[in-house]
View (cartoon, rainbow, N blue to C red):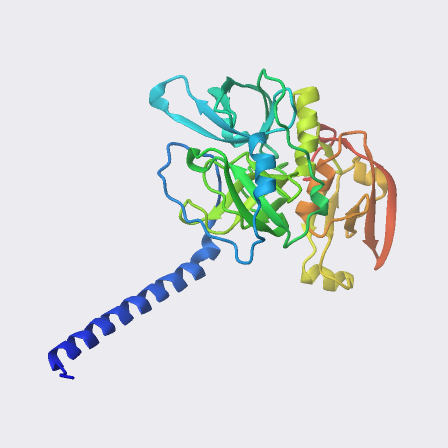
Length: 372
């Protein structure tokens, strides 16, 4: 066999260049990974956006999700919002049908800009929609179309879902109708500081199901085809999916929808306290065995909390037996109730656990300050 020195030299040079390119890309990828801590949260409605996404495929997924996907896609609609002028453009997202006679959940930020709202079902029929009511504090809205015999989705008990459980996200990313993606529950009770206002409720379910602009208001479902949450936001540097999506838990959604349907607005109950997450310093000062729970920093006069005997330096660990490891979890639990409802609180005081029964929740407006 004849050897060509020039050819060998050329091959070695090409390999060296290729190796440098690979090393450069690795360094770039590594740097991007480190920079993710600076990513910002954003809603996932769309507004004349370009077709660009970065989907990923979860590792080790079950054989298929065909049965669940077939069950739920017809209960998820496409929401479009058009302004009065064609020059002002359009926006939109997704919606979840929760009754056979046309009630549909979506996000408040999908419809908050005003304009004519239209709902397109999976059979491609489009209906004008009425906004029954909105709640900016939870970023939810209730729509109504005049139709019957619709496929409706059942609520799951979002308290029962576990980290690591498989879920599907169903919606209309980039205005692509009836798109289904899969992922797992990554965390619960997340606060990502995306909702404005003193009384906003952020206790998101975090998933790695692919969610992109247009998914806002769509469904997060369990393998039984039940509604676990309403997809609302992503954490992203690029504007597209990067592995972190967030949904409003179904138990909170159900309460807000019932209020909007019955009253046209949400009736918020309050404990009347200012709170902090228990951190290592608080746990050490109070002699707590674990670093979790909600620390009571202040109690409002004449509030539900004061009437029930709650004190400064108490640590709330559950509401009606449901654990409250963090402030968002406590906020979510209290937000599920209406003024006049009675709850019980489990509290750690002076290193002893006690239960405060018959805590009557008051209307938000009945307290002068306090965030929950």
